[in-house]
Image (cartoon, rainbow, N blue to C red; front, side):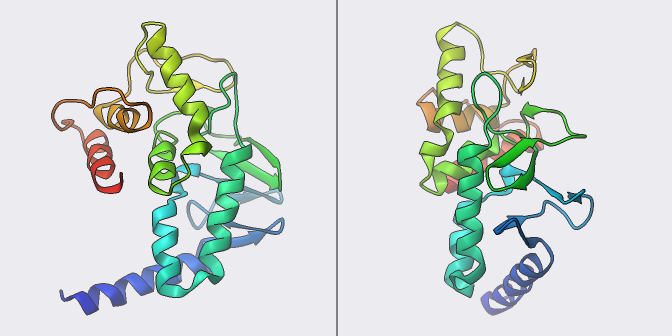
Length: 202
């Protein structure tokens, strides 16, 4: 497939996202995680790990800023305010009821976990590292106490996973707080893909 064909397919994908997954609610542009099941009782459920600012920036370069810049700005505002638990961390899933009205999404584990682990990566790649300073502080505190960075933390109870982040999570931490990066590529898909994204985006 030639470059022109890839551009055509990319344009079709961007158009589908704009038309079917970007919704106007509460005076904001919100990115739905999927076509169904994320708009209930007048509220919207979002997944902050889908706030991929480098992609929004590239999309705006191709299509103009009309949709993508407001979407990026509103995603930034959400992440700046939707922080939960003792350590004020982003959540895997967030319910949006209006500007500044954010809660842990019902029906989902109330965690900073396997989804939200990507939030620091995309924030760094999008030059928004300040948004994830609480994550950096939490991870540094874990290490200072002689504990591994947990794979997840329950944002209601404070319970932590009994196992550490994957090599992918460790790679993200190495970029955010300067720890030693993991040696070798993780054997599992998720961890390995995160490691490769860290290399590509930061």
